[in-house]
Length: 183
Image 1 (cartoon, rainbow, N blue to C red):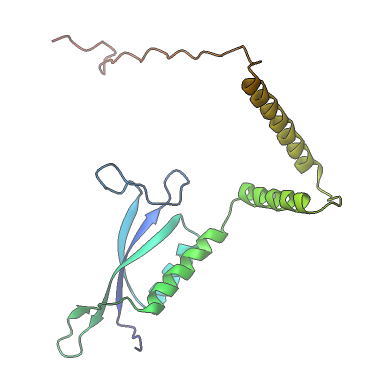
Image 2 (image 1 turned 45 degrees about the vertical axis):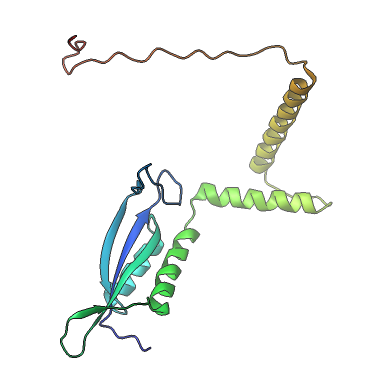
């Protein structure tokens, strides 16, 4: 099937919610993520520009809901039964570009995880900069403390139990700062 410029693609875009790249729903099934529905003409300058900006945006998912094709006889738009492969590939390619845009902290974390994996696999020394060495030292100290506490709990040596008391809920007040009237 040869795609023409006349195709109209309708899709729904979803934003990440609290840094989580998955669709979150309420108990009744309603989506809690910010989302919007858009319609674009496929294989046009508008389509290309939108796909480019989609790669660096906060949108993490796009569902193609409908693809419309103009009828040759009447000029009306008819819904295609199957979404063309070229459309879905174009959208998924644009969204994969969004995954590559990582913050500097995320890049550093990836680098450290890779180095840690290399340390575990190799028996030789790996040269790291001082900041990363300090962080790894702190992590190892915390891991040792955590292991020691676990051993104490399992053996029954841990006698000190920390109790956390719940705080009293704040009282409701009206706009003027007065407590609400009793009925």
